[in-house]
Amino acid sequence: MIKILISGIFGHMGRNVAELVDADQNCELLCGVDLKEGEMYGAPVYASFADVREKADAVIDFSNAANLKNILAYAEKFCVPVVLAATGYTADDLEAIEKASQKIAVFKTANLSVGINLLQKLVKEAAAFLGDQFDIEIVEKHHNLKKDAPSGTALMLAESANEAFCGGKTFIYGREGMVGARSKKEIGIHAVRGGTIVGEHEVMFAGEDEIITLSHSARSKKVFAAGAVTAAKFIAGKPAGKYDMHDVLA
Image (cartoon, rainbow, N blue to C red; front, side, top):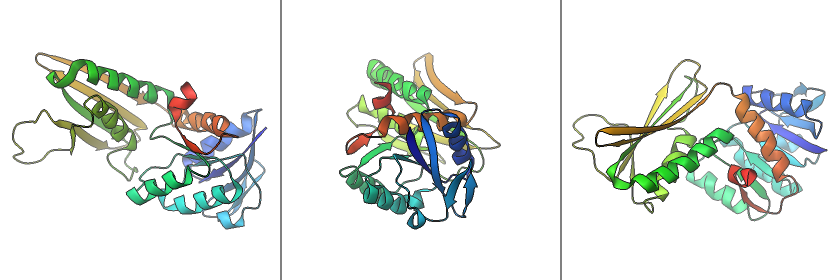
């Protein structure tokens, strides 16, 4: 029985994760952490990690990048693996995550969907096959409450494509004004925000007289919650290091 602590448990994603954990015979909802105290499925919810006394087998974080320091401090103190599912990490945050992974198991991915991770693999293969004869443009769409742009998933897809060019491409975030002819060194990334779109990502390879499009559409946030629970099961008991969904799929 894997005991799971959920950070950001009262948020929309946190509630989805809690529901899945509570229904999973191999998991136990140990406790949660959120801005206010309370209870979820009979488990206590604390207002701060400083109030947590229980030792979890894994932490799932769907809170906010600003909470990273507190999460890592708890995880390192109790040697607990952590699944980081928040977005909007800064360069300093990424450095802190890297350092933490030397002490504990850290699972981090820009997207917990199995489908997105398959798309990432296909994008890399397509970029390697098509080369510079095709221009690469990425369009991501999310709901009007999403704060960061472009999405972490769009960047992940762009980086996967760029691996085929040994990192030689430059990311261009939207275009405005007299930008001139498109360079072969560009990967265009565009963000759309509106309504209640859960998450859509399209990678277009535009060549002479033909276009190849690879896309993924999430119809419910439950796909991400399910991925987080799968990741928590996978990472529980793992040695220190960085893990992602590709490790799970393998």
